[in-house]
Length: 271
View (cartoon, rainbow, N blue to C red):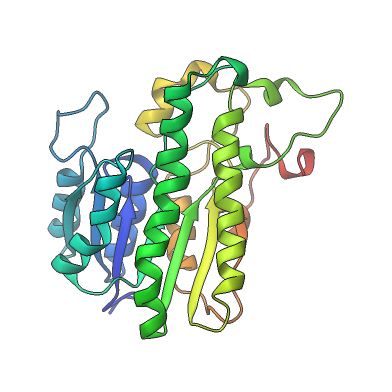
């Protein structure tokens, strides 16, 4: 018996990295999981990992999972995700909005296309998925939404500003700030319905395939957290009491009460 037996979950960006780890962790606790991403088959994308491979790992351990191919930069695809997941598994109890992308560089240099793509994937898609999933959760009186955020949503203290505040992540941080406000605001609107909405970010660096590609942009003194931390924290958030634990913005190691040495973007150096 797992803590999520009988629950249905959707995890976006589940082909690799944090999303795949969260999907596997939820499935390991008994949830049936719909994995959403563009990369369905191994070797069909520049980065390693695919939702088919994640599904295979889940099923090999006795779990239940399905692959939902969707490009969250395409609004038409976003419209189909909840319907397809529920057709395959049943009414959704858990939604983890994890899919993300970052294009590094000075804020004034980012192209309109990249700017629009980031906001579509990390702001518009999660917002629309909440609109599509939450009514069913409310009607059943239970639901858990976990939006993956980042410390980049916070504001560096200054002047003078530390070097890491100029790391080329302003548009990414803007997207995550929007996700934070979605999480706190939606939590307030849904108070008393049985639906919890929370935001979860990493305390340190997670060495995902995507992070490896952009490693030149990563400061040398960024502490690395265990790969399991985000999945463990997401699992905890998917079991909280919506009456008391909603509208929170938390970071993995702190939320798990595990010791962790802060580096750049330390909470004490941001507001």
